[in-house]
Image (cartoon, rainbow, N blue to C red; front, side):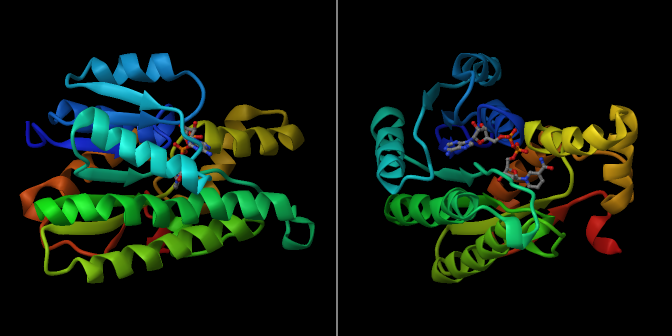
Length: 256
Ligand code: NAD
């Protein structure tokens, strides 16, 4: 129960990686504020099964005003904010000349600017207590590019730059800031990309295998649970000098 008495906020935690991380934080004793769209009741039930107090706030974290409300409600309802996991993210796949301007703006607002807003709002309380953990879910696409993902790759590289800056600005405190860089994780975000490939192939198994073969040498998906365990390590005392890293968990993607 390493996080007993601590409060965690995980953006985009009604599904996928965020939900997996929230479950691990709850199992480690944290009270958790969930956020995200879709089936909030199901997410609440699955996180609550691990123990602790669990609430959900429906803020759209591409909107700075709603982010302010999310952070202040977390502090008001759960008492504090000690662990901030910036996880909410979306994807759009298109060549740059055809990339819809509205999708670019939406991806930058959600995948990058939201991290700036939650961080600037969470830091004052963390500084007062001289303890905090900020974990930004970037991507291997924060370190290398792929075609047709201009906004996502730009935003995820930006998250790593922001992570390093926050790590330096808090370097002499008990607050750390780090990024996770997952390879393929089989969530709704990736399922959409498999479905796109499948439109041409008409064979889901083959579409999945080809997606993995292109980038991920292990030919196996990373799981939300594994990313949750890495998050717990970054929350631990042993990780107190891990600052400003972009930690890939990617089945060998970046080793190539
Ligand atoms: P997902 O689609 O399963 O989950 C996304 C979550 O974000 C959901 O809870 C959704 O409701 C929420 N969300 C979407 N728009 C939101 C908004 N405007 N405001 C608040 N919440 C919003 O996706 P995932 O694969 O679990 O992705 C989570 C994070 O991990 C993203 O930042 C993504 O870029 C990153 N990532 C995913 C993979 C992968 O292979 N799945 C790899 C690397 C990085």
